[in-house]
Amino acid sequence: MVEFAATGSKIYFNGRIVPEREATVHVLSGAVKYGATVFEGICAYLGDEGRLTVFRLPEHLLRLQDSMRIMRFEQDWSVSHLTEVVTDVIKANELHEDSHIRLSAYVLSEGFLDATAPVALGCLAVGRHDKSLSDKVARAQVSSWHRIEDSSMPPRIKCSANYQNGRLATIQARTDGYDEAILLTGSGKVAESAGACLMAVRDGVVITPTITGSILESVTRATLIELCESELGVEVQQREIDRTELYLCEEVFLCGSGYEVMPIVNIDGYPIGDGEVGSKTRAVFDIYDAATRGRLPQYEHWLTAV
Image 1 (cartoon, rainbow, N blue to C red):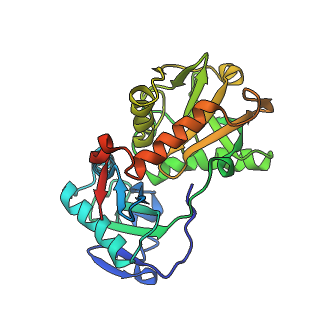
Image 2 (cartoon, one colour; image 1 turned 90 degrees about the horizontal axis):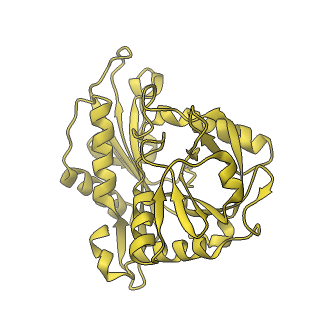
């Protein structure tokens, strides 16, 4: 999770890098009126040798392109152009630390609901503080709000408007004394949290909902599946998960670019496992951290140098 505040940073805004206060969007734009904005949250990490790299940047940029395509945005920026925008913003802000990048494409037009152009691009990069696994521990509530689905507001689109669904669930969970919300599909199966995908451990096997189960096609989720199977030797099953099955799991954790790996030790008042961070969650966190910081040479292709 990353919270943004005024930082005095420089932002790429509609073709130029400008001071933060100049990066403004009109209140009547499609982006503001109708939530016609798609975005990516991307992380850069400082490696042990002092090298700053962006983690899985091409995959994030391809997903941004996919989101724009489904939203029918009349723009087709190349991956090479988007890569240049991201790295230029990091350099302009002289960042040499773990960083979070917010790359957004949005409709500037003051037209009606069907406006698909002109489309502008914005990119913000700010430093982020590294958190230990113990600092991320959370309690979750299964929400009374259902997750959006492909036939209404497709969750595979990383669209700002979609996050109203998770916002309602998060407000409810925190009002009720929990840290995070877990949403179910319309048929009552586990989908994901308000802002991250869910993975769990049941009988020693990692389980996670399928990509057609009302979830975002998460880059981090795909990364952890590969690392679990290839590096940790842990079987991963992508399948439907019942709500009550969560209560019986040995471990549950959320994952996402901003979340990284977040242990969930209690759901609806039920302790998960022994109510502490589990061994597989720790192993997943450690192997993910190693991959993001360039400690695993076999995954060097996941890193884009700044």
